[in-house]
Length: 137
Image (cartoon, rainbow, N blue to C red; front, side, top):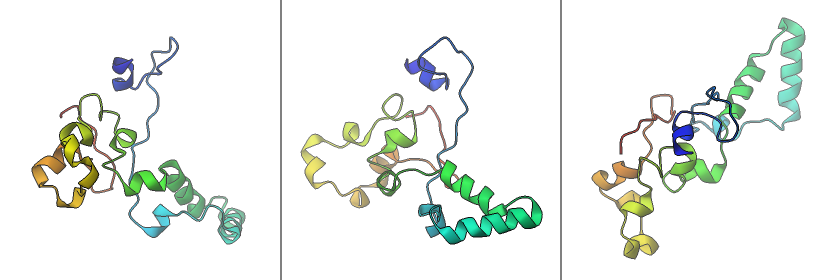
């Protein structure tokens, strides 16, 4: 099962073709954090753009945001939910509770940990705020 996960294959079934994967992107701007998908005005603007030009830049941008949308609790706490953002955490990368001694769990303040420890269980991001995947610990 772990081998299939690392190769981006479906876990069940005989399909050996890799699944399409979307690079996880942590939101930076307010618009990325809270896309206006339920706004009536947004959809009116999209409708007008399509009527004028046959396509909508706003719809494409909105689709891109929704494609990368992750629950607010997860993107606000990427250390605690690293296993949801990078499939290697828990397999080849250690989770925070495997590194920080159990006695410190109730008082842990991630912002006060030294960089050496923090780097062991933090996500690596590129300039587009996308998670960089690697197999290193």
